[in-house]
Structure formats: structure tokens, C-alpha cells
Length: 68
Image (cartoon, rainbow, N blue to C red; front, top):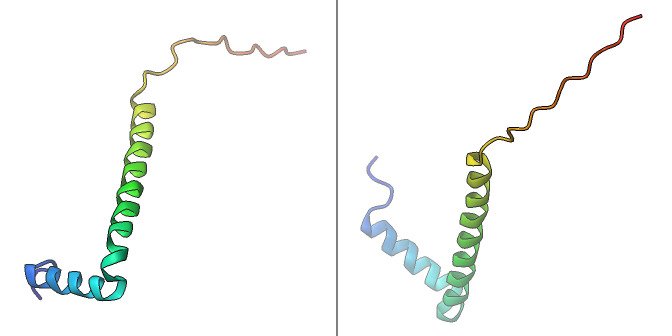
């Protein structure tokens, strides 16, 4: 079947995007995409920081049950 992203495929995709959105909208689309990726990276950084954070070392004494 071949590779999906050969240079000719990328050129065709670029031409179709240019025709659909026009030259004036492309910078706006690029800016929006960049801001979205930046927000995603910041969100992922927060998640990985939370996962890698050392666990709380304070131990609580388990409640004793009273039997009658």
C-alpha cells in the first residue's frame, strides 16, 4: 500500500488546505493550533508533575473498632 506521508501527499494536502482556507486564514489557523498545542503541553506537564510528586509520608492511625 505504501507510506502514508510521502512528500507528494504532503504537497497535495498543503494545496487543498490553501484552496479551502485561503492565504489570509492560514496564519490565524497556525496561531490557534500553536496555542492549542502549548496548552496541551502545559496540561500534560501538570499531570506528570503530579504523578512524579513524592507521596504524602504522614501516616494516620487507623480507627479502632469498639466491640461490645
